[in-house]
Image (cartoon, rainbow, N blue to C red; front, side, top):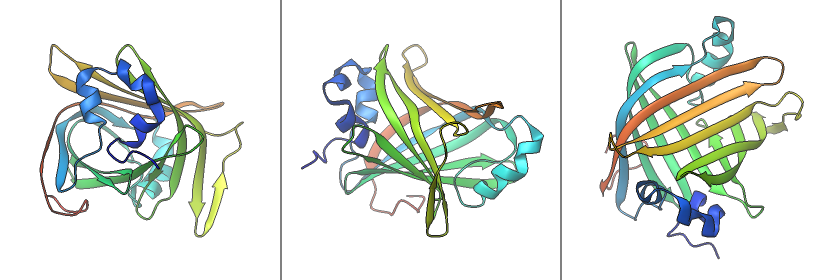
Length: 212
């Protein structure tokens, strides 16, 4: 039986979680029942720099999976909960045109990876290898798929995006940093974000879809 007191990330890391920065070890713990993890910060950059990709990403944006366009210095709020062993997150980007919400659910798999399902209902799923380097948590995608109605399609490795994510903690600034990049073979960097935030856990009885 999985230890539900640990998040999917920590369950997959096993003994490797001892190498995490103490603040990250706290961040990646499962959120206790009746509580909510709240992060507030700024994405210094987020989205796709190449304008010709914007129509594609805006279709995914409509499903709460990927931010369309290119944005800088965007305030955001993240709300985390643990639900039946999965990490459920709601990230609200406070854009000039109005708030946009990204939703994802992360679960651990028996093969030692985590799977992140993005959107509501989920439209993109990615499996990740999890590691620790210099106190930071790193994710590197091993497979990416999309959902078309009831059909799930795994993208061939030759064209599948390579997704990398790094979560670190800046002791001087007392803030956590998240950096994500998406690269496609033959195209290079197609999507990215980089932000910093402060995080706390507090009591909250509202659902993940509520601004509790």
